[in-house]
Image (tube, rainbow, N blue to C red; front, side, top):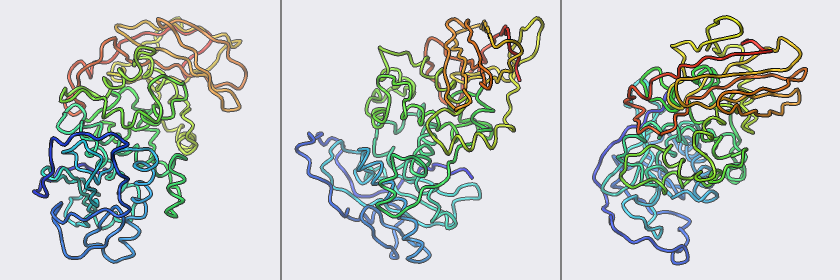
Length: 431
């Protein structure tokens, strides 16, 4: 079920919009227990307090405890261990000195049939609050997803920037999956006696619809809830690109050009420059998705269990070993086609891709031991020798030379224009 982000505006405790940022040495450590702010959200007289949270109207204390336990673990992981800005701080100030307020959580039964929870916002206080439907109070994936929105609000710089809007859901789901599965949160989970969970990765959507724009907010057909593996790729940074790794948070917010309404890809372009082009990074992301080579065992297991049901029908057959992309599945802005190949000869493979505009082509070759090697195809041309037992996949990504200022919720004709390309294959055919 989608966990929709909704903005609820209320009045509340005012906070200074111009407080000067303090140097780390001048800022005292946050208190162990934050103070309550009863003006943020709808309020109420029935509540239970925790160090960083206050839960209103829970069915009973056990539900409240089980709601907050994963949230306290997520707070430990992202804010304490990874140094994200605390949602206990007002986004109206850049100061880290406080005051620090508990994040209010409200049980509610009127969110609508398709909404498990949402994130409200008190613009005057600069503080978020969570509304959670009764059946989801103890669902870690739901509450931590909303906590991801609260942390994005606290980071401030994406607020009111429409071209970042769909990416909020992408990041919130990355937060949820990272909390549930990633070793980076293991120590935080153990401290609060919380077990790891299952991945929320959806291979049939991410890989089967990889031709969509990299983040597509189209209602009913988009991928903005499912596109979060891009951030797993960026953070794990298995290719050792300068500027990526765990530090993309908070950099993706703090390096955002203030009030520019640019896209997150523009921030990433600056983070990796000048040593790497963002087009190269996106191309390698899709190449790694061919075999879900992201150092994420639970994602890999989900891929293996579902791969037979993934739609790989991207090409139409021409003649003489030539193929053309199906127009309906031509990769759109920063999307890709993932094309499994079958060796038909001795193992010598030659590939030539010709396209109407900028693209990145890669061969992703998986050995029997699970290791994957990547063969870049400069200008679309190249080859490799495939050994017995190896799996080979061609990946063609739509990576135009210039980034678009695109809004995933209102996709432009440029963003939805598919990459028209043809492929000549020697020694292999599409599976």
